[in-house]
Structure formats: C-alpha cells, structure tokens
Image 1 (cartoon, protein in one colour):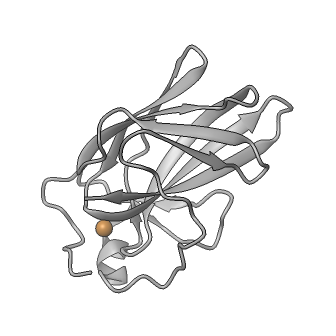
Image 2 (image 1 turned 90 degrees about the vertical axis):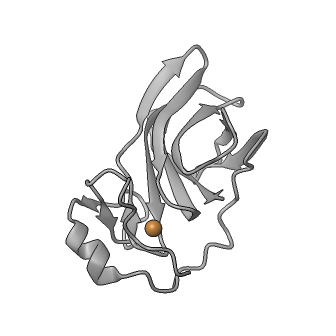
Length: 156
Ligand SMILES: [Cu+2]
C-alpha cells in the first residue's frame, strides 16, 4: 500500500495505537509515531474480522456473543461517516467507538455516540484515508459486563 500516511486535509490530531491490548487500545496523540511507524505493509491478520457492507445491514457478534447490527447511513466514503448500531437480541448499550488503521498504525478522532430510540448512531466517524480500517465498538450488556465487537471497514 503506497498511500501517503497523512492526509493534508485531515484533522491534525492523529492517534497512534498499539495492537497489544485487544480490550481497550490506548491512544497516544502524536503524529511523530505515525511517521516512525511509516506506511509499511500490514503485519496483522485481519481475516477473522467480519467486513462491514458498504450498504445494507451487517450482523456481527461481540466477544461475548451479543448480536450487533451495523448499517452505514450512506455508502462508506473517505471523510465523515455515520453508522447505525443496534442490538436486536438483547438490550445493550453502545458506550464508545474507535477506528484504527492497522496498516499505518494510526486511528482517528473518536466519533460521537447518540442514542436514537432502540439504536445508537455513531456520528462523525472520520475515515480520512482509503483502505482497511478496524472499527471497535465498546458495549455494555444488560447484565453490566463490558464487551466489544470489531468490524473491518474498507474505504474505497
Ligand atoms: Cu492510514
């Protein structure tokens, strides 16, 4: 992948994250790390992560087997995206979402989460580069346990 790592039109705040912690990737706000990590090839295997359909509804299962439905409000594109997230099988709460580009070792600013009836809206999800992103959804089930679901997003 020969994309440039830093989009001049993107937010100057870049987030680098290590993949060591699967539960809660920690974010370090320094663009220097992005430069150091470079734009090399991806070393992670992402074959197990389900891919979000650009249109229509994608169903994934969380680590604790909660069914999660995700639907992009508009076809996935470079820039701000909006996703609708719901939990048809049980009442769960979407607490946070974060996007990470493993190939380049950076994330993007955290999107806003809004409740809309029985679903949640992930607003201003900034996917500022074409390529593969990983979206991590942090949820809390009705019984109060922290849980997470991960879906891959290919930005054309
Ligand atoms: Cu990138």
